[in-house]
Image 1 (cartoon, one colour):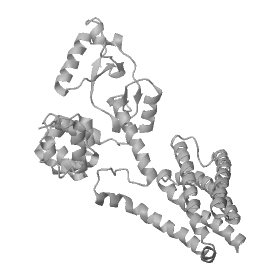
Image 2 (image 1 turned 90 degrees about the horizontal axis):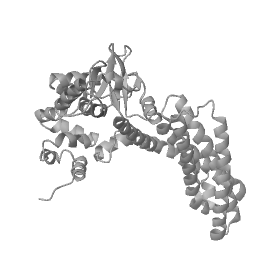
Image 3 (image 1 turned 30 degrees about the vertical axis):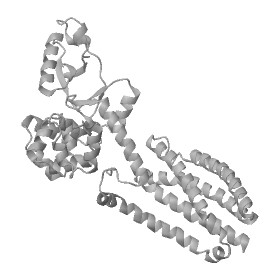
Image 4 (image 1 turned 180 degrees about the vertical axis):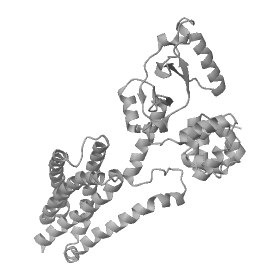
Length: 417
């Protein structure tokens, strides 16, 4: 039987975890825990809910406490508590500690894979403790060095190889960055980005060590943040994945689509005000999608820049005037360029100079509308405590559609009738 690659196994289970439950069970017992960690959150949840409980407990107890915590957090609270109380006592204590922390703070990123060593220990004594930890957990810990019960740094593992075994470890201790448990993930990410290190220690108010944050966990957080931002921007729920069932996808999206439907009726009612003009000049209907499309695209470009600026705290409602001014100037120039191009197309194809003139003016006006609302609406949403990426898109699109059609058809009524 040909060997199936790990990526194919993951893909197969992700697409239908319930159907492929037996496929997961057919995998090597030693590989199952690592395989479980690589699956999508939806697949992890389905397997943990549908596998025999004894097997689930066996899988969880083979993982590091932080990984076990992440998996339990995908489950309903009732199931989470049920499994937690049946874990072995040591793991239960560690996971219970991790579950207490807000997952959106520094404490929510911690790993318990560290070892506390007194600065007076010799390198040989430290090496023995590290080896004991490795045998027990299967992972090399971060040796954190303490003096009078206070953290003074960490011991680089390579010092165990190239120094005298009788030397005290305090002699080779290096400083390590520390943060408080309630620091935001953004602060932690910035610490890793701005400083060349691979780990950070989380200390409570008394200076006691709560855990270690590894760069790998931050990279995973960055990937998840990028994905969530993309989902928010599209109006898609941040828990939705490509592997979700049709029912789940409907549940995640229907509210946004209903709101979009209501705003679409507003745009349609604007168009209905000019029925007589459109019926007399059918060519107007042909070019209406261009007005809507260009306005929407221009607004999306502005919105993307503003959301990034808001996220990086580069702009607020109080400081937006210079940005608004620049966006409007850029919109006018872009509108002028596109107006000339669209006018040429209308003149060449339809030989209608009046329609060309109307469409050109409407193009410039709608790009200005897109710049104005694309700049202000996300800032207003942020001021109101709403997520600008999620909430602003609908209002901006409504503004460009309604005002774009109003200008285009209003000019047509004035000039052509």
